[in-house]
Amino acid sequence: MTIAKNKYTIFIMKRAFVTGITGQDGFYLSKLLLEKGYEVSGTIRRSSTFNTTRIDSLISDYKNTEQFKLYYSDLLDSSSINSLIQKIKPHEVYNLAAQSHVAVSFKNPHFSVLTSTSGSLSLLDAVKNLDSNIKYYQASSSEMFGGVGSESLNETSLFIPKSPYAAGKLFAHNITRIYRESYDMFCSNGILFNHESPLRGETFVTRKISRAVGRIYHKIQNKLTLGNLDAVRDWGFAGDYVNAMWMILQHDKPDDWVIATGEAYSVKDFAREAFKVVDLDWEDYVLSDKKYERPNEVHHLLGDPTKAKNELKWKPETSFKDLVKMMVESDLLLAEQEKVLLDKKLIKPTWDNS
Ligand code: NAP
Ligand code: G4F
Image (cartoon, rainbow, N blue to C red):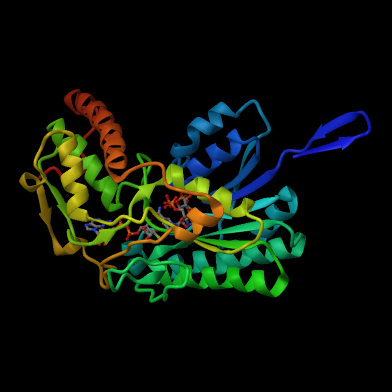
């Protein structure tokens, strides 16, 4: 964005405010925005151990600039959220923060639900009170659909949430739409289907598989125990999906958008493809145990991204096969490093190597 003033040209950087910046999407989105010349401010939570591993490369790359700034906050602390919005005066807000693990949301339901519900409301209200022209992106989720049938799901499909996580996300989705309609604000929901990467949290099924393949190949793990092998998901690459987030806020009007690949695979398919990268047969290594099943399973999620393809001109660039390969190749390198440390007795295995 530039403003011409007399004979001088003043460059004004667009300012983005990102919650959940330490997460998988936080990294990919921040990288994208920084490369586009944005000033990016994000919230981090105080933790007794370092929790900025994913964004350390960005901290380092931008340390001599004013372009990348981090602030302690928590979505449950509405006063700090409000103060930060007042201080930063962002042009765009991306609300990515959540306790995003569905199975964990059954164990910590209050925290999981409140982060999405109270958190989105605090942020929307802070935006409305400062400047209703600020653009707001809400990280909505395909989990809200509940995955009962096998048809492909679009923006008009019914929401039947099946977990505390999904119920909290549905509130955030609705309150985002309500602020858009009530106050004429630019508030959009990206209903993103599962998206993965080498930076995916290690307890999500795809990363659990790619981590295990790396370790099994390097002979520091013997078996991989999963839960429901028949669950079906529409898996895309996180790097492609953050591009959709940005495009959603650049569109000429606020709206709700399904972001997906339009292809579905089972957990079994993912495991088969991942072991194939290292010429191993998944059936020789994968076990199933009920302890990894959920109280209420989402069986089948397949998205229909037609609206995003037609109106945003967004499309996924990474195929299922390439995504699996990318994750396995990255985790082969990590396992190789772990093997060296294990051999020197500098670490002990924290993973299941029974
Ligand atoms: P993620 O890796 O689990 O990152 C979640 C982020 O939220 C982390 O930075 C985490 O901080 C932060 N956070 C958690 N509770 C918080 C709180 N109370 N206050 C402030 N920050 C908090 O998730 P992701 O995969 O990047 O997903 C990004 C968003 O998209 C999430 O809202 C997720 O629910 C949603 N989503 C994800 C997918 C997917 O397939 N990845 C699909 C649909 C929707 P710490 O690092 O300190 O824990
Ligand atoms: O990898 P998952 O834990 O992802 P899930 O539950 O689909 O949620 C992810 O995607 C949502 C979008 O739809 C996001 F909103 C959410 O934040 C998160 O990013 O599980 C995928 C499937 C499930 O059906 C699960 O039951 O894999 C099945 N599964 C089978 N064995 C397993 C395992 N899941 C995990 N985490 N661990 C297993 O051992």
